[in-house]
Amino acid sequence: MGLSRYDVDADNWTIYTQYNDPEDELEMVASQSKKGTKRDETTPEELQRVHGNLAIMEINANPPGRDEEKLNGEWVKILNASDVSIDMTGFTLSDDAGHTYRFGELILPNGATITIFTGSGTDSLESLYWMAKTPIWNNRGDTAYLKNIDGKLVHMYSYSASGR
Image (cartoon, rainbow, N blue to C red; front, side, top):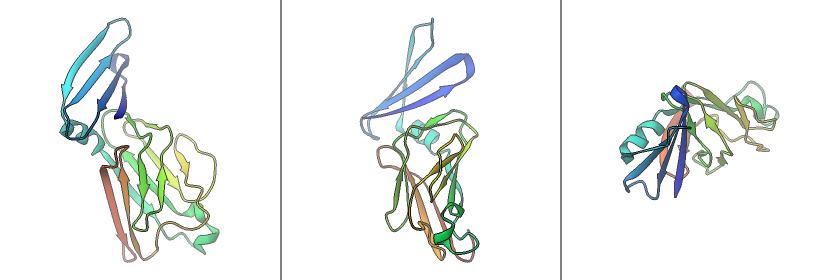
């Protein structure tokens, strides 16, 4: 069972979308303090519309100098282009070789970006660190896969040495 949480600023609504399987009918439960509970039905297509607004915007795969010495020069930037915050907890980011980063607890606000650096550092609201000891992104080309908590592809981004 998956659970996606979307915090909506208007009137302090918090929307939870609960589902067992992407093909199942989804149930959206919204609650507002002091006003009880409102229940609405939604579809997998509507959930995909929200998750579909997550996009890998850019990959910096080849920083100046030796990649092994500049691991944080490698990074991936993801944008939430939806009109709601998206819970990315348990999502994964991976490449063609199977290197995989699993997101910890993360609510990405609408309109915000998050940058995942290959090397080490201290996670913040804008930056996460893979903690890899070697480069992840191939300089000659690679594909990044962003998947939701159920392993369903949300977005992919391919690039080659000649351009992104």
